[in-house]
Length: 396
Image (cartoon, rainbow, N blue to C red; front, side, top):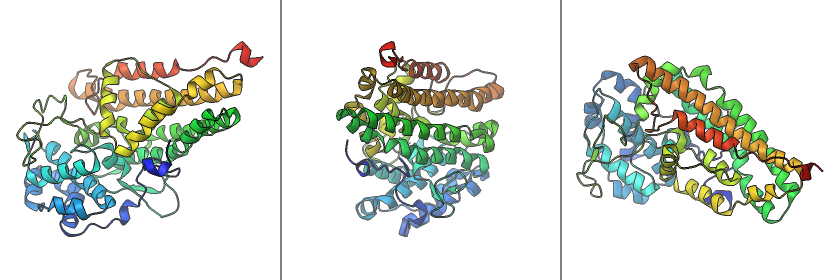
């Protein structure tokens, strides 16, 4: 494993942006773009968001911008453009067949440069879309704010900020993963035990944060006012042929189909699975989650891939004669299973029940086009099945 900086990770921010997004200044055409994007909460209720975006957006010189802007500026531009792309597609009753060049050309150029795909990714929705209310007080729920909104309001912000707080706290676990691998390679059982114990304590905090989702994000408001804007255009019956990206040569005139933004694009749980040696039997959900890997920022993908290649933690613990080590390992397995259980509960209350109430149909399709309910249960159960027994030999 390489240093955390190589993966764009830190202990205090985890996978969150390592810069202060609210301090990034956009100039020229991008400044105008930011102003339009920030007005989405005022423009979307008009019901004519498409005409307004076409009229108000400039057509920036993207080759020049990509060549001269900083990475921080390009990532903030990606936040603003990706929100406007989603608003253009889902902000009126019927989705369009074509994304106009004022949106298609910039989002394609930014996505290509950043190694992502040209719609709203989790990184733009969460990782790069927050700021501290008071600098230096910490990245906690009582001190963070959402920068770019669709409609705005407490429920939309709380949904995003719960994820921000989780990502920040997860840095305490992520930062220990290379050390765990080094300790395993050095056969340092005491160090592995200490690190796993510390990681389990971090996960207790993560799960406590996740438990707070219902405090300020109502299931109905989420389903009716937050979720509609983050859908994608793959496996979406409203867009059976995808969307044509106008004047983007690599796409031509063929409709493109991309997955919608989802918390499953977060790299936290895949990183834990990779470290702990948790795998899942093939099913539609696994295929979907595997497909989402490309939607993550390139540095975060490398972190997961390096963990998968280098971690022999499970085998090390299995052959250990130290029962406390097995219990520390199991504490982390159980914590991830608990996280998956809570996710399953939220999928039921925030999506499945709301959809049933709205349509009378019990549809098992999540935000990103996920066949979710029974497969979330299966993946939770497969995680629990990775708990290791404490053998008589170890106890003796």
